[in-house]
Length: 114
Length: 112
Image (tube, rainbow over all chains, first blue to last red; front, side, top):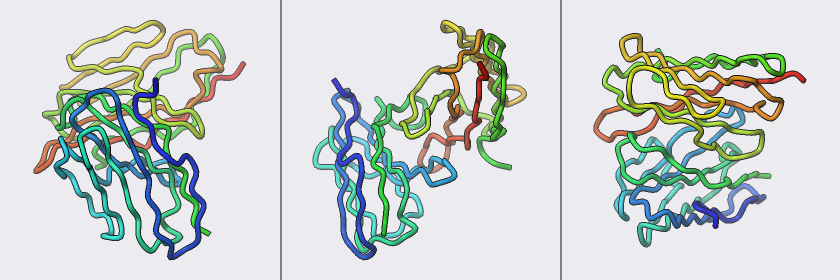
């Protein structure tokens, strides 16, 4: 059973399009995250939700909008995609918020903007 | 100073040797530290957590924490080519919203 699953695994699209990435966790965790990993492999947090509530919103362009319909799901919608959005996006979850609990990652969504 | 700092490598060790990966962190009150392994094209995978000063062993892996020096390390004994990956250190940062900060990772290459 996959603990944190993301779809799609690959996303290739044109500049200016709108796309969504979905994430689900079956670990019973309260907190979910979106990370961006760029070409230099730096893993940077974008958003965090605790039990459907937004608790971390880093300096991310407002073209990125997360949505958490319930604590097991966290989706990411991106409007007007730009070349610089090309990266790997990882969803993760942890039992609690606060950074003192280990986080478990999904397999990632590789986004390529043409 | 970066919040979590690692040497990017590559760190090259021969098969069977001990690989030593190091990490320093800036938040003195951090309580929890994590080591993740990331193979090329894959997601980060948790391999060790450490919460207290001293050593914690799990199979071929030993994590070492020194809070006074703000230093955490990972030793891999009897290194295997399958250990070749990027190793990410992570530590929490307290602030308005607490979060986990990742280092940039150290690339380990184990030579057969």
